[in-house]
Amino acid sequence: MRKMANPKIKVVGLKKAFGDLEVLKGIDLEISSGEVVCIIGPSGSGKSTFLRCLNRLEEPTAGEIFVDGESITSNGADVDRVRRHLGMVFQQFNLFPHYTVKQNLMFAPVELKLKTPVEAEKTAIRLLDRVGLGDKVDAKPRELSGGQQQRVAIARALAMEPDIMLFDEPTSALDPEMVSEVLDVMRELAEEGMTMVIVTHEMGFAHDVADRVIFIDDGVIVEQGTPEQVMDHPQSVRTKSFLSKVL
Amino acid sequence: MSLSSLLETFEQLAPMLAGGFVTTLQVTVSSLIIAMVLGILVCLMHISHKRVLRGIAKFYIWIIRGTPMLVQAFYIYFAVPQLIQLSTGSSFRIDVFTASLITLSLNAGAYLSEIFRGSIESVDKGQMEASRSLGVSYATSMRKIILPQAVRICLPSLVNQCIITLKDSTILYAIGLGEIMYQAKIYVGRTMESFATYTWVAICFLLITSVLMLISRTVEKRMHA
Image 1 (cartoon, each protein chain N blue to C red):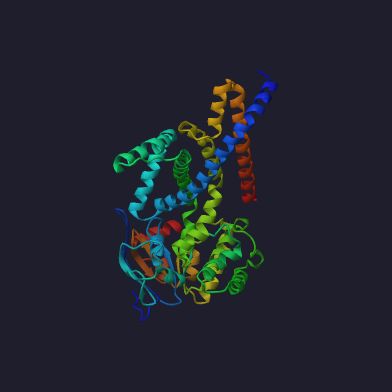
Image 2 (tube, rainbow over the protein chains, first blue to last red):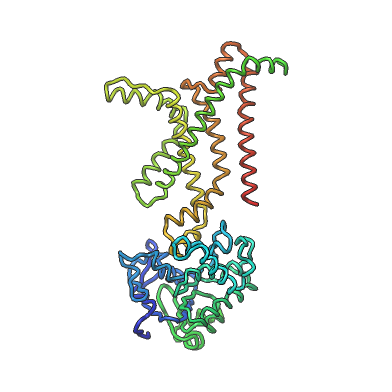
């Protein structure tokens, strides 16, 4: 594994168990600033759990996670503060149904007093424009298609001006014809230099966009490297077998 | 038995019925207000991470759900005063309205807390996660994201519980609360006009419960619009 001088995210010996079931069996990883990392692997392999540990939606059972050199797993760590820097996009969008699209984006920045409502609204409209939904600012989430909802969810995460974005299977709940509109937004983000960790089943997208692909199976990192290394010339039998099923 | 005799009875019955009805409404409305606060508190205890609080909430709900309200009323009106009297040595009495208020509040409070809890828990788990992942605290997420959605979900059950509590208040005639059923019984005792009297009692309840159901349906419709 590459050693970095100042990794954006550093994970050391991460383990997570649900009761007797050990889902993550010791993950070590460093991600540098601006890097786009795609995590692939069979369902139930622990990749989503790993991602959810990164912003402590799941509490790790053991191990440490550092963001910008600061431990987010120590007892004194202020989880809420850490999460402001880590945007998260979920498979099921999880937009707030009682708010309009614009209010979805304004909620956290205003609530946390990072922006005045006027500033937050400006940012919201700018971001919605950017994801191609400038005409939907006052719509309710349920009036939007899945692809549009997911683009709003990305914009909502961006409204906090995070420097890392986590994506948990962002296109898995979408109808096939809506996948590309979401991937296009993500691709743009990647090109702008956002640090991204993406759990995905979109192999083509991972191959295109990732700086590094990580194959996780059975709670461990089996193989990692450039998309060419991992996806075109896999070394491990497990990676080969997985890829032969999904490609 | 004819319509005219029904109407005749009503003229005689109306003042008593009206008096009883005022008491019924007083005890029901005050109890529901207390029960609402109690229900929220118990619900928060029930979903809290503190085992002791959860235990207290569960115990309370277990007692109320597991015993008839008539027994609860007798317990509060007769049994508890005796217990206090025996343990302190001085005489203790509780007036019937207070006992009724306590009974109805404790009863509705338990059911309401379960209604609130069910509504909160039926809000998609992803809502809390989305809010927390934006860096918003648990308390604020609860207040701004979860509760507004839970209120919508619980509204029909809430109105339903109001109707149940209103109807349950008639049980309190058994400890002598001068509510509508109590007045009706006195009237029947005097005149033997069971049919006419209880018909009017039923009509009174149907009137209010129908209004409540209508309100709930209108509110529901507006929320889904």
